Image (cartoon, rainbow, N blue to C red; front, side, top):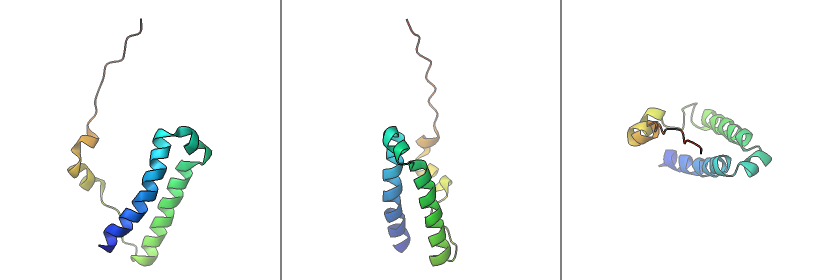
Length: 83
């Protein structure tokens, strides 16, 4: 439960920043959101080292892909023809 609570708390912050990065580029650029995301990740990893004896607090990407295989799918759409 502690593991999932930690992930939920951290994830909410990452989610908000990532959505701004993806869908509100002007704001993301102004606040240097990519830098903030990386800084948060470093802070979270430092917390893991201190509070979790270095154990990671994230799931392996394979676990996510198993639950959501469509994330790996590539949709190839023909280029639109102008004119």
